[in-house]
Length: 108
Image (cartoon, rainbow, N blue to C red; front, top):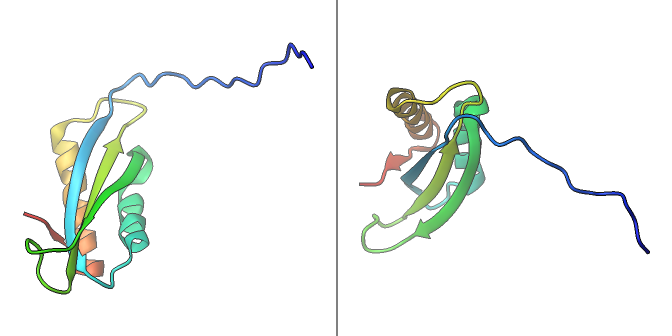
């Protein structure tokens, strides 16, 4: 059946650039990924565009009973260009919250 109706939806191209940040944290084996993500989302506010896990590592480079979880995070402010100082402050807030709530440490 032929139809002239279009189901295409268009989304405006963002005016301001995104900032991609990879975050690698070491947590106890029993810490849930969803708990980490909940904290990242709550601390990022409305500038979090995307949060994707890309690796979970257990092995010789991580202490026994721990796991390393790596995320690719994309931030974008719809009203301005984000600068390094703003992103660094946000990452510091996220890391502090992860440490206080879940005992997470930045993987070195």
